[in-house]
Image 1 (cartoon, rainbow, N blue to C red):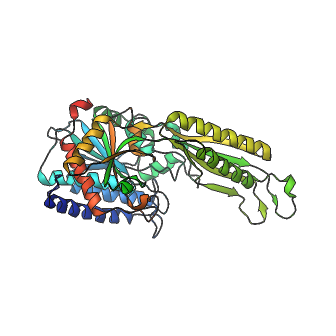
Image 2: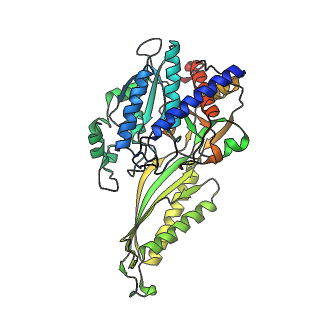
Image 3: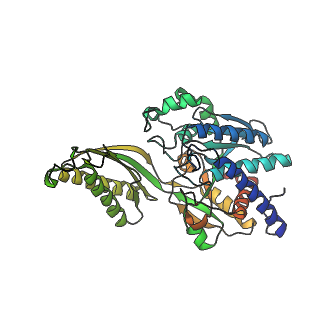
Length: 428
């Protein structure tokens, strides 16, 4: 199948066929779930294991050597014209939120494999190798850490993360060992360090997860920067008591304090330009209808493309929560679970994506990413860039997530053309 970018009808038909094949692969991948009929695929879960096995098999069929690395990432390598040449890394993640859509993360993985498959079908070798990586922990849903596999590849993994526990008390290191990974190797894996040191760049295709491209009527966009993000877990300790016998004025209600804090989060973000802040989870103990809540835990996610705005906003939110706790006579603990600075994309790679899109007859829109992505972990480690694909209604993290075959095929064609014209000398 000819998929070289072109503005003629034949090329468009080829891209549409390729896009349809991509959507079929994504449908198959969505079948690997821990959630029954809903798509839920958490890091190091049985569904993750099954998806990793399927991907490794497809990578080998596409002409790559494939393996699952120490962190549970699936890695496929397609040699360049010279065996052992430095590689361009391509990828995204295959873990999901609970009750997820089919395209978040997985589109980038499937697109990268399809591009290699096309090169292999043609017997075409580039001046560099390609390594496709399906990361396992971008969402940070199962464990209170994020980007475990990505940081392992980038050489920035913190061994302390191995002690992070999921809701069932299973530690990340234990789960990784049971998965077949190698926890002890993550902090200083010589093979990983050598691979990153010799890599040229990291490129990622991803759905936009927002409405900008659709509103602009543009199928693809070039990402300029990725928002920085800070995540916290807040623990609130009050006093449990009988719902009928404890007077209102004397209560130390952990849930009421948590509700007050949730509204404080919203107020701060509403009044701070460029800041978004979210409480995505709230757990209440003991959780009985006739018992005053004695404890509560909530998550806090704070983001901005400006690191100063993010840090100041997070500090203001935590100060407001401390004041609420004092006023309501409850104890407050704050645990920061991740801190990721804003990540500007590499100009030469942004221009390469834009030029490839233009050769395909599309003037791409340049836009920042409000969501975090694996690509941001490589900022300061490797040149990196992202190509966004529009999604219907800007909906993501939702089963209603939707893209078209035409847009998927175009993204694959743009990625392939970008690789063929990659400004390698500008990256060294």
